[in-house]
Amino acid sequence: MKTKQRLDKILAHMGFGTRSEIKRLVKAGEVEVNGSTVKDSGLQVNPAADTILVAGEQVVYREYIYVMLNKPQGVISATEDTRERTVIDLLPEEYRHFEPFPVGRLDKDTEGLLLLTNDGQLAHQLLSPRKHVPKTYYAEVAGRVDSRDEEAFAKGVTLDDGYETMPAKLVILKQGDPEQSQLSRIELTIQEGKFHQVKRMFEAVGKKVVYLKRITMGPLLLDEHLPLGGYRELTEAELAALPLVKKE
Image (cartoon, rainbow, N blue to C red; front, side, top):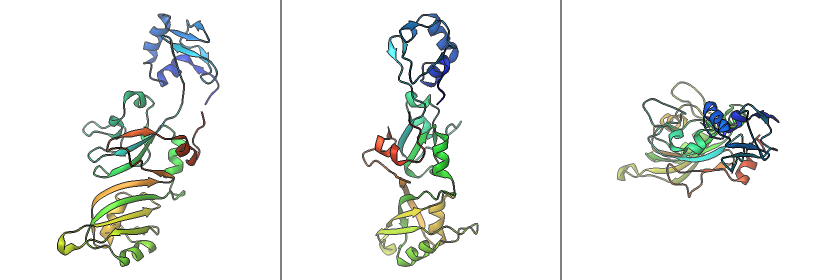
């Protein structure tokens, strides 16, 4: 974070309005810095060291946000869309003005862990193919998943486009019985993020995923207390476990 920034830029980042709206606040005498009423909205201030008040309310500045979302089905992993509801639409304005974005994507019909942030460096660390960040999914699969599938996934399977996946860890929680229309329940940990990868991996072994939820991404574990569509900021312990998180 730069030592000094324009006051109007800082206040806009913190959600106090557009620069023109902030200019009007300053003109109305509503903004103070270190106990003095400000007359210039372009004043250079240090948000980490200077005390800023807007209408008597102290501004607690922060540059980055890190929000865990339990993504529901029916919303898309995008920042905006003219037709579909996005994961950003699930957040209140107090977070949206930071202009967060989803770190990676979950399919529209996939639930579970999604990190929303405006920290581009962190997103790169988590998404870079070279980093092989593990992601674990819970899935319900039509058909009987057995040890042959565990062995196939452990070696890597060939997807429909010829791509050979990296080795993946398949854990069978409950074997389904196709004759009784019972689904298999599994957990699968992969180190890549190919389009529809989990679904396509099961298709490669002749089975179909009917329900999918991401439960981990790197060191992050989905908070089981978060309802679908629920969100919360990451805890200090979760932040400390992430690579290159900016320290305020």
